[in-house]
Length: 131
Image (cartoon, rainbow, N blue to C red; front, side):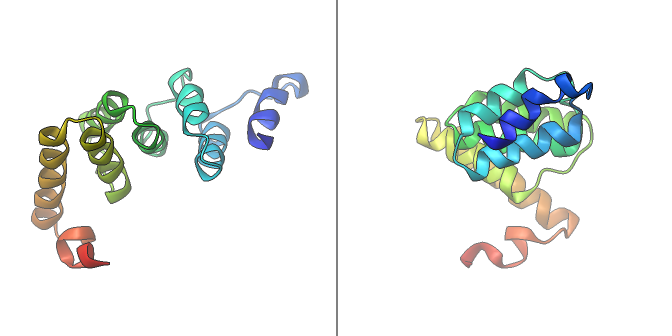
C-alpha cells in the first residue's frame, strides 16, 4: 500500500513514474501478496517493455493466476530477445497448471529446461531442481 501511495503521489511532486519506480512498486505489491494490484499497475503502464518490467509483469500475472497475461509477458520477453528467468517460467507454468491448462504449463517448463540446458545458463537444468 505504501508503494502505491508513493507512486500516486509522484505527479503532485512533479515527478513522472518511470520503469524503475513502477517496477519497484510492482515488486513491493508482490512481496505484500497484492498480485492483482501489481498486474493492474504494470498492464496500465506505457513503460512495460524492458526485461525487468516484463519479468515483473509475468511473475505478478502468474502469481495472480492470470495465466494468459503471464504467458503473453513471457512471449513478449522472448520476442525482444530477453532470456526468461526461472521465476518467470515457473510463475507462468504454475498459473497455467492451476488454471487447468497443464499441457501448456508443462510445455513451458520443458521449453525453459531445454533452453537452459542448451545455453548452459544454469538454473534448473544444472541441478537446482531438487532444491
